[in-house]
Length: 235
Image (cartoon, rainbow, N blue to C red; front, top):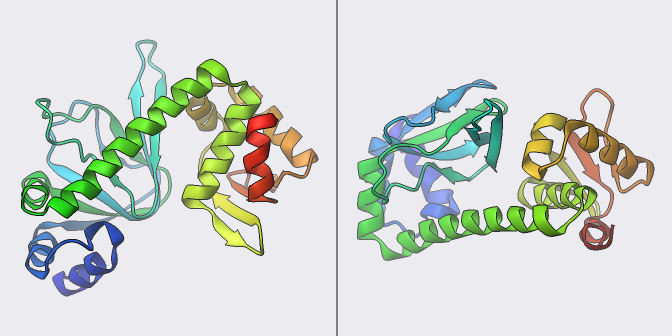
């Protein structure tokens, strides 16, 4: 992608709307545009921070490795999502690894450019701060879910939130999501087991709350988002 195309792209993205034309030009001149295949490591845990990343299209898994060697998923970043943005702490190394979950197109923004834009533009700084706060809130919600909610409620909540973040509205209340995750990865996100995820998804399908094909279980059709929202509290 050439610089002119990057300028047009950044101008159209909500996150960068507050930037001035000059700041957009600086961003476009320094940002690198890359297309990565599925299961490609974007950066590794403990690597020195060089870039802040913006997903134009695709999805990226952020995770850590537990002492037992297992990989634990912290978050999933979808289209128009930012990650690696925590560059103002004393720690200058990434606290997680990042891996693509499907073919993904990314902008790699040099840390110094990103830091300069945050310092120069208070509205942009507020947008970035809102992203950080939202991520912290999501972690807190997961912790509360683990303590206070049953496995089925946590999985239903994951499906519902995926619909809000990633879903394509079909008809009046139906929503199609393609989360690109295996049952094992959903289990990590919901603090359950792979077997539990498979069983509960099958139950929800039989109850006609969702539908998915046997060959493409990562694509889930939520029959009714309003009903799913209610179900996650009383299911």
